[in-house]
Image 1: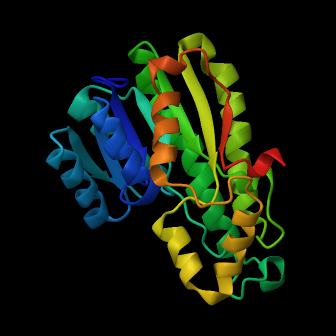
Image 2: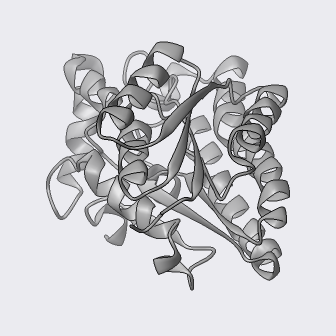
Length: 260
């Protein structure tokens, strides 16, 4: 088991990539703290993990509020004595594709901008910083950020707030990796693209946004939507000791789209 007895906190694990990865981490022996803003969804993830005979518990968290991130880390310390793995996966596309699918032409409001920065970048920084305090007491750890292939190669249809926030996570990954290597704390990021989540399915179901996803898939050499299990496989590797030499890595999981 790659993650035997590791305590792993995963934000945004009530659904999608987060849920699938929480299930995978638990199957690899991790004690998973599922965290989400949706209590029912988080509880369902925990139920699925426990039904497989593995260990998980739930802690609600609105990642845009630093006080709630503090409560999440306190919960980890109280429940398991601290955290070994912190994965900031919570995210939202918000109005990234625009109400009419025209990206920039739809306009970016102050609320749109703030939401993207708060959910992705602000939460990533403060959540990781809080996790580091506990990791130092445990002799090290692993931090993972969910960025996006849109941060590496932004589609022209997408308004700027989403890829800018996600690109900020890439820079944060590199800065924290350099700073924390001496403390045996590794920091990496993944950049998924066109993963079969409920979010992608909803975009495909809406005629105003379906074309955006179709165009992204056309630009992927593999020519297909990727599966959540494929992301979970990469994430489990990056936070495990099998990746002990890797820090500051920004890994595209995009079917080759950013290689073009």
